[in-house]
Length: 220
Image (cartoon, rainbow, N blue to C red; front, top):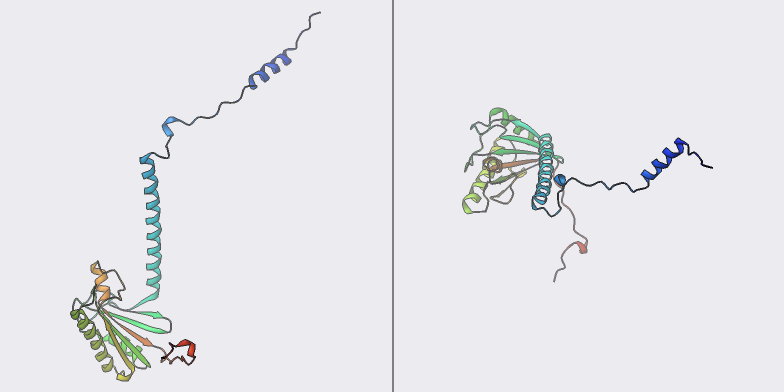
């Protein structure tokens, strides 16, 4: 006796038969393949890394500059000799106040406007100690720049005495090279290094003690 197969069962059987074969593995398009050893691709990756590194360095410089701007508080934007804007600035460093006065190339004369002199006078006249440091924009120390650094410090010392600071409260030092505050390969950097720093102490430094024999070099 012949049996009739229901149409629904026949359709299901056909569907299962079609699914019995494994699905095809997706293949990447030849147009989008980038071999790891392709020189152009390797160079592109290297360029991306360098670009990201440059971006990070630029961001670090931006943040550093922003922090320095917050630290520096401009006192005067011009000196009597017409030296560029922001020629004199003050910044808090710990408990001391540091003024920076800049100079023309080779210049040793301190020229301040009357307002700048008043600011300086108010800061230093009662200070227990004022330290003056003369600097130049020289890349290497030499006799000429040593003289310029010394004369800049001396010129500032004379001004402080004129403002009423007793000579025993003033200390001076000078250094022609090696204490740069900006790169020396640009005009702006050189201008920043042609300076005298006047550090006004809020309290007189106290001598420390090295009485402990272990803190000193043994004497023969």
